[in-house]
Length: 278
Image (cartoon, rainbow, N blue to C red; front, side, top):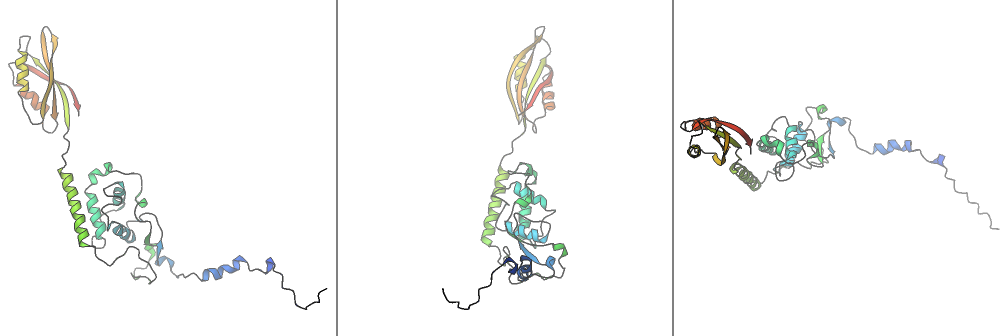
């Protein structure tokens, strides 16, 4: 047998000898810096999309977002611009948010086309914009005399003291002007109608060839005569049924019928029997 060395046995580790988790919480949280007035500090919040655009913080995020963009999403106006535009009650302050004010004025020029712009009109404006934004937590409770500058450790991801590159501004404005010019030069489709007209003679002895020639002699801007035929009415009388295409803004059917009635040697009356929009 080995001789007893006289050393004490190591103490046994039991669960009762371990500190409880709750006893460690004060030490854990004491290492996290905090302030007495949490609501008055700006926090870096990781958000998806724009925040409340009616606040200065939200307007600043929008201004930063459109500073290098003409549109909220993509390279043409879309429902993303419409949703963001409608989230604003008025144009942002051009002095404080020049890029946002410029974007707002540009999108306002498409207001008559909002319903036809591409994109999902059901999506809210909050799904668009940056993935990370620095905003004020509960800004309504922030003290009025709070300094604008924060601690040196605060990170401003979007702020910049540099002025916008004049060359970039010139290029953007030239592209916008070219787009507007192209849009203005694009011809608008005129509203047209296809009309079927009945022209009735006095009797069966009326020269129907001369009647038709008289009707077709009427020329107007926006009037195109089409096919015609003679339709029996009774007792040997036939009426002229003629088709025509008219531009609604240029040709009045009432005035046209008055002109046809002036050929009183041949024409008794005329009626519009069918009309269809093209």
